[in-house]
Image (cartoon, rainbow, N blue to C red; front, side, top):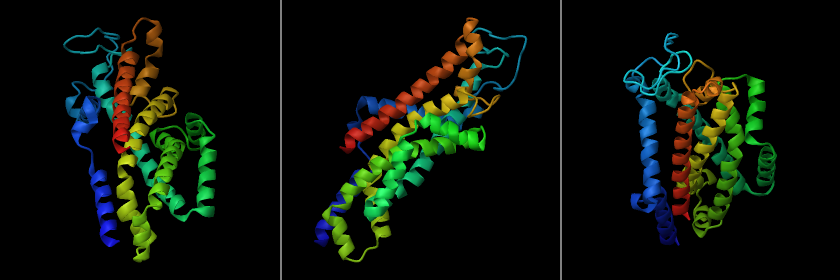
Length: 286
């Protein structure tokens, strides 16, 4: 019994370590490369940006692309290329914080529901159902209306809105894992629920959690950009892709779509990369 338990847990742990790159396919690998490039751009943004993103030059509004301004300037003469690079920081940091909060709150809740069952599972499931009843963006707007606009409020609001999705999926997988023979064997040997969950359930569920977090990252990025577009997320003049789309609304009507177009393109690229990468991970976990 003990040898069978060890063999099963070791196989699951090897599966949780990661997936061979070849199994991700060219789509997964390309998405991973894009994610790495975006992360490097955000980390080294101050070094990469050729100009101060908030430097206003009223003498050269809507300047065309040139050697000095690679993507031109906005309505106040700010360099669009520099603002895109610096905007990657808040545009990627915000979703990252939301996903981390999702995992830190949703995974323990899901494990508690799956392990305890009965009344605890029923109560947690009903709370998740109530949160599911509200559209994510509307729930986020409600939370922001209570705590005020800003990146911190937007992060908390979106974490509350998106946490039920991760918790529900993790709960279902944890319920299946909970019924496996190796868990019963560990209980018979006297292992505590916390130890079994921390040393066995979580590592075995890690590929699923990472995959769902990656997919969630893309959806969160869209919602955060939407909140910033509405003036409820990142506040101007901070460089942010959602803020840039909002700031470029009037310029669109004047025939200058550069700011909104380039910022929107960056969001599309990032969302596609994280979503496709997460979906490839989910396919490998099946």
